[in-house]
Length: 153
Image (cartoon, rainbow, N blue to C red):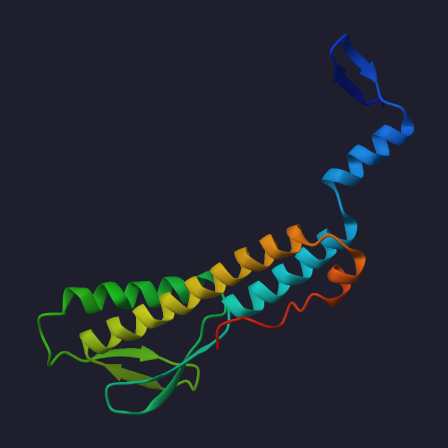
């Protein structure tokens, strides 16, 4: 397939060198590989478990492995919203330790809000890292870019 470029006098076929320069300007395998690695790191950070303390001051780990876990947390958050006017209500949530953590509605909503904030920070870190990678201009910068630093704890 021959590439065409626009010129003042009309469309003209690109030379092989012009084609390669154009392709190199839109596709950088080194940067793309680095972005792919950052994406893998992003996924591992996004689906990381979340440590919390329930309403009885018992440590618990909330699993966040996939969209099913996310939906489960959101459905319990809806339940917490429905019972938010009842401070005596106890909401049970099965944790990673395979026991029930007990939360008041307000405590569960605080935990869910903290979890959402953390996941948002992970997403923002990913977006920032992608932008930083796109701005790298040399092979040395790409090779020395640290994909592991800067992620929220």
